[in-house]
Image (cartoon, rainbow, N blue to C red; front, side):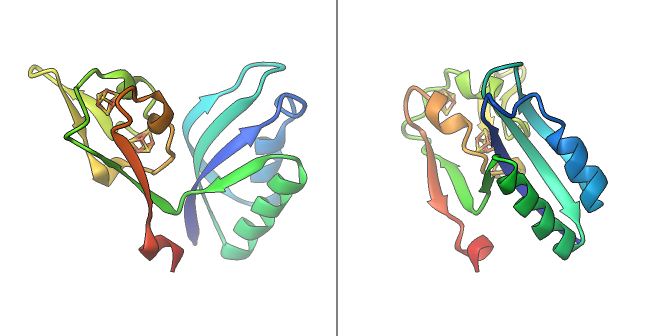
Amino acid sequence: MHAEILVLHFGKDIVDQPIIYRLVKDFDLEFNLLKATIYPRQEGIIVLELRGHPKNFEAGVKYLKNAGVKVQRVASEVRRNDERCYQCGTCTAICPTGALHVKRPEMEIVFDVEKCSACELCCPVCPARAMEVSINRNAVA
Ligand code: SF4
Ligand code: SF4
């Protein structure tokens, strides 16, 4: 069994097509949806954990690419530069895994690296550019 977190970018020309349905049905794969931002006739992003036999997994990724989906395989690490972070909380609204969350009652913005899928969605929304990406060499090896 192989499992990986993928970030899928759908162009507006394919966003209405049943691509995920076919991925699961035709390639015998399971998925755990982490985040979906999809609107009819607009570009969309889906973050999911995909699992299955390694051959099916690779065939499924090939199918996605042939269908016009931009597939981003998560092989990077995202870290928070605590010296830059000023605890504004913007990132907590977009983080699909809860790695960035509000600790109550202190109202502290916590970054739990163990929960981070490295989807990078938090990087562009952080006004302080505190979320930094680096290559996870263990994942690439
Ligand atoms: S990269 Fe950012 S948004 Fe994505 S899971 Fe990690 S902390 Fe959350
Ligand atoms: S958006 Fe940036 S500055 Fe604001 S809490 Fe998140 S990491 Fe910190």
